Image 1 (cartoon, rainbow, N blue to C red):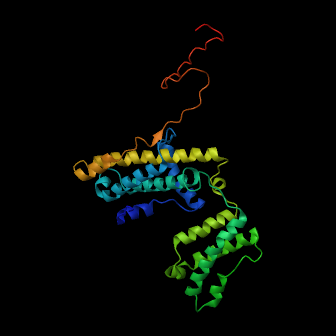
Image 2 (cartoon, rainbow, N blue to C red):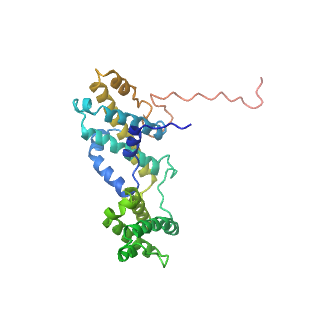
Image 3 (tube, rainbow, N blue to C red):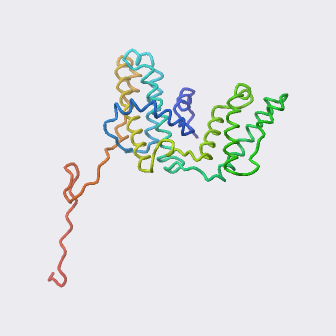
Length: 288
């Protein structure tokens, strides 16, 4: 039997989930960058599955939300809470695109024919929303019925851009019949792919190695913010036993490990044991 989440846990999960489009990721990253540059002095790499670190951070964020008032009295207010929330979103997204997520560690744009095929259900659903919302305004509804008759990349790009503009323009009419922000993000992601604007290009990353450095920077940053929130919570809830217990239980000791540069030569590093010496080789034909 699965674990049933509380309403508060579901709210936290929704608030901190991965973003859907490169543009959203870019916005989050740009907002976080000044604080990331300030507190991250050494970029480390994951020492446990990032999914485990995400669970720990979300549990901590739930405590931060529940003990908002005591924390605010100890210099941990909405600004610090917002940084922690955004860091969890960044980490969830980086894990999905660069790490251990369903994209198997690489953000890859689908071939054009696959994107065109994938856009069909999205376009059909948008048309269904419009048919109801503008049942008595056929001229408007007809604008949502456009199809890619040529099957070309150029027409698909143009169509998706136009449909997204229409959906956003008429969002107040379409939302009551089912249009959601998530649906709009899905359409925006399709447009990004068909336009060839993949994540690596948008973020200015030249290769997978740079993507992994970015992911490691984000996991380091999120973990540091977790340490700060834990310390603030223990201090703020010093006289609140349950709160103090919950914050004290938050631990990130297994989240990170230092990156060890490759060493040249045969000398062992001071903090690493020397390799065992091989047994002597008996000369051929030597007496036993």
